[in-house]
Length: 316
Image (cartoon, rainbow, N blue to C red; front, side):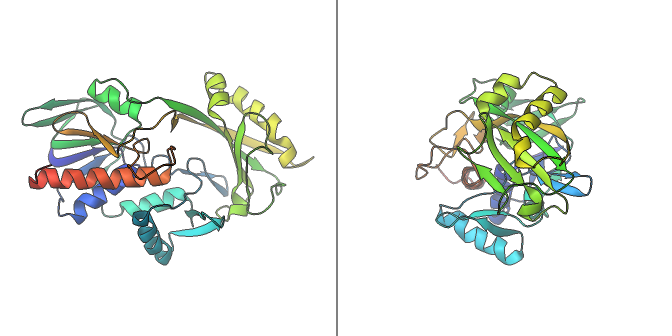
């Protein structure tokens, strides 16, 4: 199989890069994704009758480019304002993964396809797949977390990432979290970064909590069994749902959740035909110093524009 531009990873950066290429007239593209769904860390899980976001919970808007696009998403009914005044937190009306699926609608995506390595040659690139398949492309964009992307092309990782352990807890009755169903900051037990009640958030018909642990706590306990991790998390946050309100749960493991440091450019050339981008790659005007939804969006857009010009033969 051959294509003009191959995008590895169908998370937000990959989706936005693909949309940008198509908007610029480059339609001979393919996204390959190792998971069974697009979205990456825009992840939503059904749990019984309930539902929970367990990656990104919301996003904020600081750039004019994203602000303009969010206006169209609001009109489509894909997102809504959740809470916050100075910088409103937006969230997917049906969960964050539904937003990713809406954005990927109509794009050529190949799911359940794991990339093992990528080699670059003077006349193109070859993507070696698990199971022995090969895809050839003129150009490759890798949007996986930087350590994984670097491994695919045999280079040193430009940044390191913190992990994140997330407890997904289904309750028998309502939690004690106040509206809007979100808590973070100093009011939480040591090791807990954020708690979200998805019934209060408005995407679940039953009370389901997502409990995010800090990078330091997650690193310390990442090698433990799910059962042990879940017991630790439950003990820490039990006061937030009250006596007699029983829970059952599961654990989601994000090995690469947040970059420990960021790269001060929206994408990185890893060869003459290979480009890396993602949420750890920040635009020059981004002074937040943090990986987030918006940095992934802007990085994907920038990489897509760069590749569109390269395909068209426009000098850099």
